[in-house]
Amino acid sequence: MTFVGIDLGTSGVKVVIAGEAHEILAEANAPITTARPAPGWSEQHPDSWIDAIEQCFTHLHQTVPHALADVAAIGLSGHMLGPVLINSADQPIRATLLWNDERATTECATLLQRVPDLGFRANGIPDPGMGAPKLLWLAQHEPEVLEHTDCLLLPKDYIRLWLTGERASDPSDAAGLMLLDCASGTWDPALCDAAGWSLDRLPPLVNSWEAAGGLRAELAQRWGMKPGLPVAAGGGDNMVGSLGVGVTQPSDTIISLGTSAVTCIVDPTFRPAPEIAVMTSAHVVPEAFLSMGVVMSATASVDWLSQLTQTPVATLAEEAQALTGRLMQEALPLMRPNFNGIRTPYLQPGARGLLTGISLSTNRAHLMWSILEGIAFQVHECLRAQQQHHLTLGEIRLVGGGARNLLWGTMIACLLDRPLVLAQHREVSAALGAVRLGQAASGLPLEQTLHSKPPAERVLEPEAALQDYLQQRFQQFEALPRDLASL
Image (cartoon, rainbow, N blue to C red; front, side, top):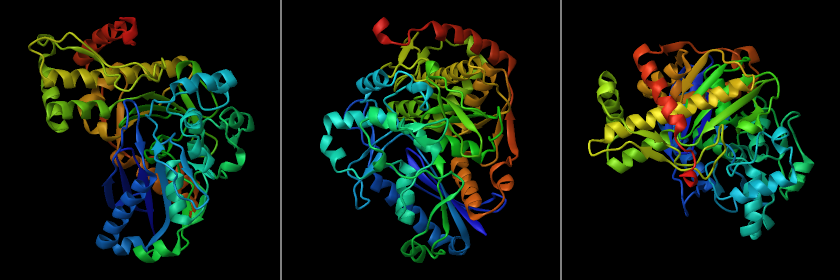
């Protein structure tokens, strides 16, 4: 038997075919474009996700038809928080406002005024990225969109709807709408009322590891697959990515360096921490929650520099690495790379980046170092805040596209004074986590599918000289203003 894992990321789709032992047999990728119609706005049309998935399956059907024909189940992972509004014909009514869309700032205050204890019932304190503030914004600015909405889904739920014809969601992803009582994993009528939403326009909730529909016969025939094979409910990308590298037991920790950076710690109890802008949602394994700190711009900041300097990211990384042997001789600038605001632990969505200490000798390598370092500092701030909230760190695993940059990982290891484990296939952790959910939905034992750990490929240890340097720089970083209004 083989299994398919679909990972809908912000910048593209990954589809992986894996065997029962989670070994990767084939994979396909397709890009997705994000529209930014105004500063701070970020949208994608759901049909672009379907187009990308069709490209991936077409490629796999042409290159590994036998592996597709042997697929026993499909699992899903998707970027979170963006409400997908569909009509009675299951068609999207407008482009989806993404997790990093900032337009609903005023609505956050409105929501918190209506439900003062919201942060202790939902997955955190209101943030423009969350679903409920977006619904309030749409009600104010595009009421006709909501009038035609028959159901609200999350991004990976729309993909499953297209695959199976069934509407559903799961608690891990649904938490990002701020309409869910996270402790019980059920829709909350009072939270829905506060957001101006009705329960009859929400989908049923299914556990992430259970089947939530079967593959439509039309698609099965097109790709040479079995009609009706189970499609798991799936989950939010941070939770599914954690599963993909075996972060499922209490205190297991993962740092994901993607478009954003996310620090996740497994907790057996629902331990909300809204005062430090930490999100707490159900994990995609039974009887577990995931505490999540967020750095809004991680690889997005690196991509910005790449575009600005017209230099490939790999070249910038090499040039920054070359600085490590002469740090004390270089006058490196200090940066707060808050290109898209601050979430954990200060919740300042309007904050912007700050660069200080530049001179005529400042070059692109210096800027790259400052960005990597600044994001590592913010990751450290997230985990420090979570530890102060009585969460404990166990083994820490590093994933995401940024995990390819070993200097970046070593910086974080130095700041945390702990080793970071680089697991096998970490670059496709969310897709492999989706594979595991598909395996569970097919009936394989949960111990095999949800609780095994992939082996370490490499371990990044703190380096004494770099550690001393970064600790000094971190003190200077913390002294920098976070909000330009304070200058």
